[in-house]
Structures are given as structure tokens and as C-alpha cells.
Image 1 (cartoon, rainbow over the protein chains, first blue to last red):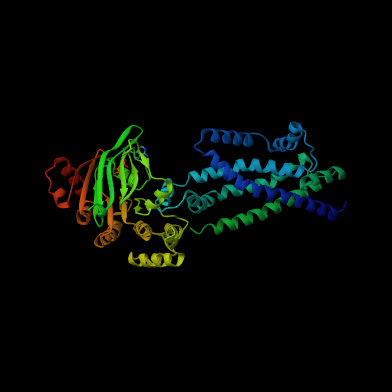
Image 2 (image 1 turned 45 degrees about the vertical axis):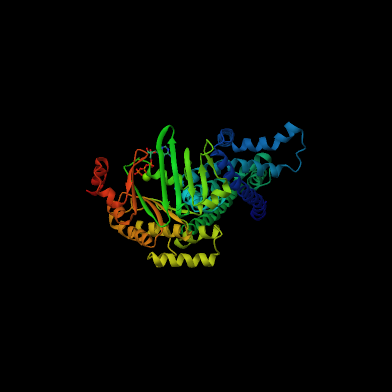
Length: 214
Length: 254
Ligand SMILES: Nc1ncnc2c1ncn2[C@@H]1O[C@H](COP(=O)(O)OP(=O)(O)OP(=O)(O)O)[C@@H](O)[C@H]1O
Ligand SMILES: [Mg+2]
């Protein structure tokens, strides 16, 4: 296999990796926000359930979670799994990352002084207006550095999809490496991940700068 | 005479976990009146304002703005008006906090205009005009596009007064508006409040600044241990023979 063909194969796998990355971000961010609100809920049942969920998500390997999410419908309901591979990956990644984002958001939300809520209340803001206009924008600025860290980890974690034999970049690199009996493809994959993260870090830095207006 | 009352508080009681902070306090404020509340730390001054501004739920008593009853225990237990009613009642008052509590991610201009626009009082253009006018009046016209973080304490407090005034409240509460300021910055804020008093803005001011209270108030209330120990015109209170009151005033004037 020539280097050119290998790079093209890996680049195709990279598209899948990017897809996993973007979809996970799109789903896990709002889900994480909801989870953080549940975690802080005054309802003891809700907050306890959410706490347990976060503990499991953070306390067990993501690789195991991928396997459980993929095979659970079959073992529990006897569902046919064709076509479920990619959705299972997105679900597993999203619920896992939502747990991490939730804890980050919680830290940010708790850092906002209660006087901000009170000022808004006296000025007639509704609870939703207070949250979305006053609290959330301040939280986003506080949590952005931690969120960036998670996002960079996510880029690398997309390679875990190999356990379900999803044809993302790492899976392909491993296949080529086995066939060619060479670590070369894995090295090239490493370079790809590095470039991917370089771009992500650049974008996040731009966003951070943009939020640095106050 | 009753329609002249902007605020009427009757027999309010408030406890925090069994600790009774307000014991049967009554306070009426007439339109145009300036009332100062003084008293030692922990006497319940902030709690009165927080009950009056609906930030804290009272355990007993009546809270009324003009003819609108916000809360009452006349039926035997404490009943608050419903959410919609309370939203309307909130329009009666404004509150200026000790710690300003401006929204740090908004410019000064937006801090002032957004609440007005959201309240539906007027559109963005009119709200903007209102803000510009207020900022000019408070000597902050060049700060409209600044963020609160770049302002001095005195400027922040003036912005927060402008923010409250933009809502056109009938009564304005101040909770120690100068206590968080460096001494050299209190003057500019007190001057603004005096200006408002001269225009007959109805105000209730919790303060430790005795000289100021004496100059600006129509009536001063001395609160101690959750009860009104004494009240009267500044002349009456400052010339009183009451030992407790004199020792408190004396301590602060030193
Ligand atoms: N949310 C709360 N929970 C428990 N106790 C409270 C709470 N708010 C106030 N208190 C208590 O109520 C009492 C009166 O407090 P308040 O803040 O009204 O006093 P204050 O007269 O404003 O004092 P200061 O001059 O120090 O501001 C204090 O003993 C305080 O500890
Ligand atoms: Mg106080």
C-alpha cells in the first residue's frame, strides 16, 4: 500500500471521527446543561438519580459504556442491531460527555453570586430570562477553559469507537497496520489527531478571546 | 389619606430557623417621603427591605403597595398574591443594593435599558433615550458603553441607581448604598440620593451615615433587635434623651 492510498483511507476515517466529535458536542452540551440543573435540583430524588448517573459515567470506562449501549437493546429487548452501530456510538459518547460537562457547568453556575438572581428578580426578569440572559452568559465565560480541555480529550476519545469496529480513523489505522505489519499507519493517525486538536485549540482560543470583552 | 401611602407594612414578622429577626414591625411610607432606617448590625434592617421587595417571604403581617396587597395574614395564615399579581406589584419599587449587583456582561447602557424593555414599558429606542437622560443626570454620559468592571465603586452605584430609576418606580429602597465604597467615593452617591430627595422621590434608605440620614430624611426609624425602638423627625431623634439611641448615634458619629 502506498503512502498516498493510506493517507486517503485515513482521511476517510477522519471524516467519521469528525462526525462523532461534532455530533457528540451538539448533543452533550445541552444535555450536560440539563443534567447540571438536575444535579442542583431541590428535588432530592432528581438530584440523587442524577448524582448516581454522573458517578457511573465518570467511574466506568467509556469503552465499556460503548459496548453496553450498543448491545443492551439486543440483550434486553432482543432488537436487531443492524444500523444501530453509529447511533449507539453517538448516544454513548453524548451521555458520557454530558456527565463531565454537567459537573463543569455546575461549578460555573454555583460561582455566580446569588445577588445576580436577586437583582434580576427585583427588576422583573422572569426565571427563564434570568437564567438565559444573566446567568448563562456569565457561566459560559467561566467554564470555557474547562470545556476546552474536555473537547480536546473528546477528539482523542473518538478513537475508542474502534471497540464497536466503527470505521473511524483509529480503527482504519489499526487495520492497515495489521495488514502491512507496520506501525507507520498508527503514527500517521497520530499526526492526524494532532492536527485535528490543533485546529480545535485554535478555534477555542478564538472563542475565549471573543468572550473576553468584560 | 390612605391613597397617599405608597408602602404600608403592618405587623410583619420574620424568622430564620427559629431565630426571630423581625418582631411585629409596622412602617408606612407616604408619597414623596424619605425614611431612613438606622440600627445596629443584625437588627433586621436588610430583612425589612428584603421582605418589602419580595426577596424574602415574611411569616406574618401585611405588605401593601398603594391599594395592592402583596401579602397578608388576615385570613389567619400568610397568603401571597399570585405570580402575575406579584409581577405587577414589583413595578412599584426599585432596590439599590450595597454591592451594586450590576450585570457584568452588559454595558452600562444595556444594564439600564434591558429591564425596561423586558418589562414592556417602552421600546428599545425610548428605553435608550431614558438611559441616556439618566446617565447625563448622574454625570455618567461618557460611561454608556463601558462595562461595570471598568468603573469605580461610586460610578457602579450611580449606574445601579440609574438602572432602578429607569423602571420609574414609585418607591426606591436603598440597602446601605455607600457601605461598600471607599470613603472618598461616598459623597458622589449621597449627592445623587439627596438630589432625588429634592425631587420628592419616595425613598426608604438603610444607612450608617448619620449626618446624611439627618440631612436627607423626613423621618428616621431606629431599629433594634427586630423592633422599632423609636422613630421621628431627625430633630426629634438627634435631640432625644433616650440612652440607647444616643449611645448608638454617638458611636457612629465618632
Ligand atoms: N438568609 C438568612 N438565613 C439565616 N439568618 C439570616 C438570614 N438573613 C439574615 N439573617 C439573620 O437575621 C438577622 C438580621 O439580619 P439583617 O441582615 O436584616 O441585619 P441588618 O440590620 O441588615 O445588619 P447589617 O447592618 O449588618 O447589615 C441577623 O442575625 C442575620 O444573621
Ligand atoms: Mg444589612
